[in-house]
Amino acid sequence: MGRLEGRVAIVTGASGALGRAIATALAAEDAAVIVHYGSNRDAAEAVVDAIRGQGGRAQSVQADLSVPDQAQRLVEAATSAFGGVHVLVNNAGITRDTLVLRMKEEDWETVISTNLSGAFYCTKAVLREFVRRRGGRIINITSVAGQIGTAGQANYAAAKAGLIGLTKAVAREVASRGITVNAVAPGFIEAGMTLQLPAEVVKGYLEQVPLGRAGKPEEVAAAVVFLASDDAAYITGSVLNVDGGLVMR
Image 1 (cartoon, rainbow, N blue to C red):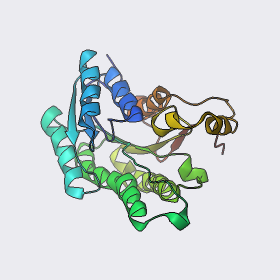
Image 2 (image 1 turned 90 degrees about the vertical axis):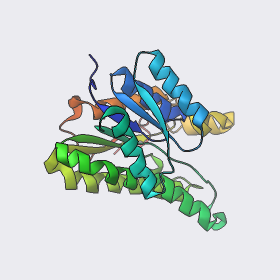
Image 3 (image 1 turned 135 degrees about the vertical axis):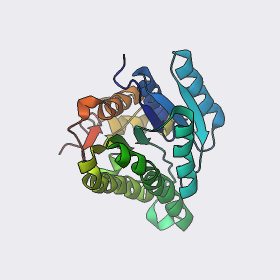
Image 4 (image 1 turned 60 degrees about the vertical axis):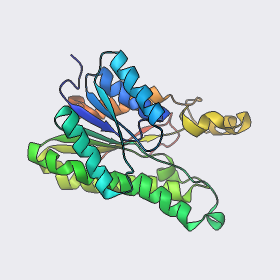
């Protein structure tokens, strides 16, 4: 029996490489998984097929999480499919990178609304059930960019820093109800856009990582599974860095 037997997890942005790793890792611990996607239905269905192929339970749901009603609909879909929600992983995120002087207002607003507001809307949507049940897990996928800043990513860094503040504030609000709220901060991970970077750029990044290598999506997923499990019942309001030592505090 897996550590998450009998639980239902929502993973937002689960059609991407990191989201896929998180969704499949949760399913491997016997959670039923809602595979959320924004636009890439084929990729989301591929995640569902992979989970079902291993004997797990999964269903894809499309939603624009920058719209509060659609975040609510996502939670309702999970309840309809699997009877409730026990774990929420706010992973959905986008980038619109450029220097501040060149950044268009819509690029700022789009990143903030998807990466930060979307997490807030999903959190609010699950909390009523969590409070009534007196238990639940919320795990926000932030980034080292939200801790140290990244040139050319003012919008992304601001959203990820905001996620850390959201994590700590909500953790304080709901701790008395047995609900934990934590964040995972990945560093340089072999996923998404990092796979498209020129070799010299990758080399420069890795020179800053004490462990001397990029992380794997599965290593981030393992941290999420831990925080979702009973093993982390006494951890809340924390930020777990999965970054090879890039950000040491």
